[in-house]
Length: 203
Length: 203
Image (cartoon, rainbow over all chains, first blue to last red; front, side, top):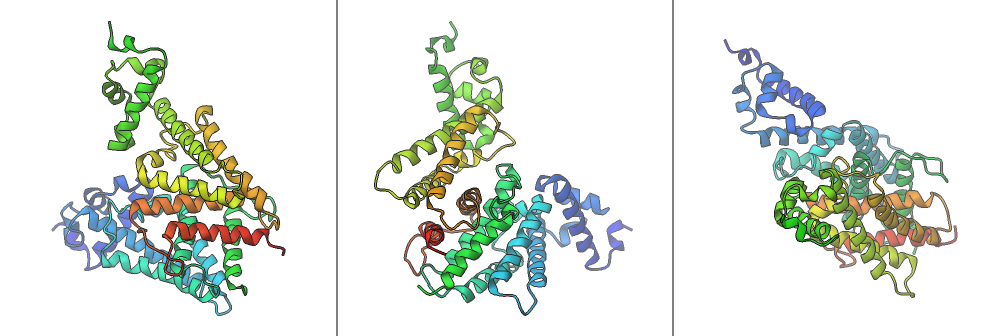
């Protein structure tokens, strides 16, 4: 009996995804192939075919799971009733930052549109949930409208992504802001807060 | 007589850099090797050795030239006496954006610290000139200090880089801001302006 037969329905997929994530964390996306994942999960290299027709499908599912994790973490961190929209945006910012700094290869995979299918429902849905969370909170804040909430969301997302990417390349180091004494990432978040507060203020 | 002998001092280096830039634009950095550059310049593969001991030195010089070009473009665009600091920051933002969108492979090379030597004087000096321009203009604006000018510079640089990088991956498309009617990049720049104006205002 082939080893893969010993898996219950669903178990094999979970085992494959766990193996894929382990390899991603060790070797970056280059190491994550159907064959390597099957080997790590201890099944034949034909076994994954039912779940993942090709590497692109595997990587897309892997990226989708990361977005789901990110969204769940944002939800969990922002569920308290007394949080203001700006606090909820701070949670999103913080979740991305920690996720990216702790798991750079997972973070980088999210933007590898050359390797993943960003139109696939499985990926688009959790990614849209994160983006909609951000635009939703921005929409609650903006009173004095000089730009639309999408532009503000794109600006915040760009800042978050750019800071993370330049931390990963080594261009930016982890410094403290001299005036506030905060770690730089938190000081950047306070810039976003100040800007959004300014939008709320009467013209 | 070897073909490389026909170059005057300096001419060979210029010819090699021109060849390297052509290959970069066509093939991304992967194609830019000492051998490929020598071949494109029509010299023996040993000829570049006087100027570039290895590929890292070649790529570092190539990146340094891009930063020099960027700084010159910023200088040229911001030399008018009647420009305010925020206008000069807008010039920097615009130069980077156009440079990145028109020459994505050149832009990406700037952050390939795995392939270039970001501590080399030849690269650090023009990169620092650009960064110092940004912090200098921010320093002229900031009156109400809640964060230091470096944090504001890192935030603006992050936003610029993140937007460009996510445009390149395909995550962001070139849209118009609905309220202002501006292209999104210009609307993002207006967010930076609004924030900086807020810092100038009395508390």
